[in-house]
Length: 404
Ligand SMILES: *Cc1c(COP(=O)(O)O)cnc(C)c1O
Image (spheres, protein in one colour):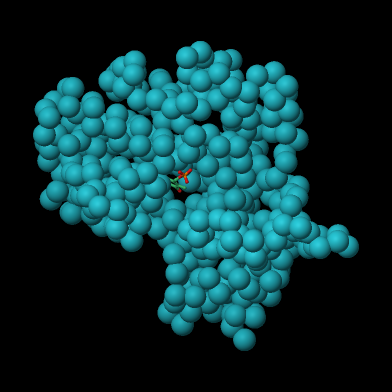
């Protein structure tokens, strides 16, 4: 701590492609929901690496799984299968609607696979002009060109030349707009069951049933992007489990590896059959290290007390945020579900979410934003209650400093 570290934030601007603007601290160590920077300053983590570190930092079960697999076998490629991948696929099938699993390394890749599969399925089974993908404004599906084009933020997909064709965007939760657009040319309807990056926007149950009903009517597939909502985040293993609506394809990533990169696309056998040998693939997908860690993650998250704990912690967050708001009057509402919550700034503070994020960091709290008007929290699913209380106290001081 006495010596100045040789690697510093300023070097970022010299050596990195400037597509990020990281904070000026450099964290070096984490344990549970606490993180320390190079100077030994402590932070409470309400960000969870953007809904990734679902069991906090360095959870002993995950570290053990990584070490154990690290001493056995790291990588084979898909020329061979491996035990952790078979075990993980079996676990995912046991706990969801899925009958088949495809592994990838990131959310965007799982979505790319889902979109290609939906297109191939429609082409094989119906006709070559059944290509329309219906998606929603503000949606986020990742950054490959197909996924980002399906995402509903033109700012992310413009400026790269011609986009993949056949993608339509509609207002989220607008059943009439969907009814007017969907047709026999529609190949898939893709959505987040709770929009994350777009501002923590809950779907209405009526909208989700309309998606399912209209897709069925027109032989279109329903793709749920649960990259952010999955793996216990909303208090169920997957958000679709809060309803009686089941998608045809579901993508999961972020929390699935608890911090180790892995993603999966889940689907039925009938749909999966349209990916034949060679149709799609990935060098790392189903990597033994990643699958071993993800198995350990599911071993923890599938425990009923962890999922119940998410709902209890949600109440603590909601009560704490309400108490802060009583005093400072900064939010119009708190949206989201489970431990994916968005405090929406009221008119007086509109556009200032980043100010709250930076003020929080000054108080020793890591938080997130979801657009200019929403302060987002996506902490560990097992964050201790004392850390919630301490983090909210720090957040209150941050709010006080912004309001002052
Ligand atoms: C984060 C996110 C993605 C992209 O995942 P990457 O791992 O960054 O590729 C896709 N969809 C949703 C809903 C996400 O939140």
